[in-house]
Length: 103
Image (tube, rainbow, N blue to C red; front, side, top):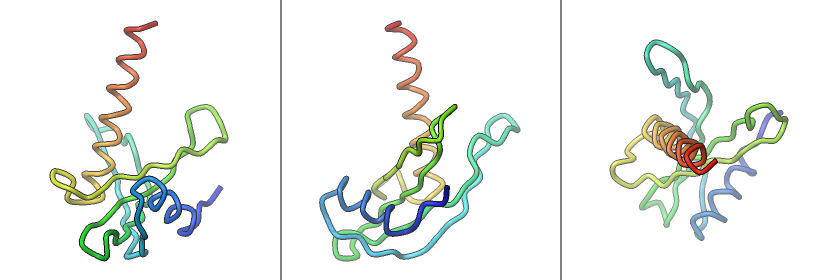
């Protein structure tokens, strides 16, 4: 299922409470210990009147057809689409580890 730019723009605007203007698309391939852990397209949006950027993408939730939307604000230390993807992967790993400890 292909997600279009307007769906991602809407997610950015809802999550950050400001208007977003599409700027570009960046392909990101993230590897860990020689294995590809994420490979996809990240949409970059100008937000805050062009003063900041936000990164947005979507991926299927593991084992389902449901898609999860990711939005990351480009504030230090997030300086690129790859940084945004790495931050999202790290956050998911932390969330998963906490959930496993609670179960």
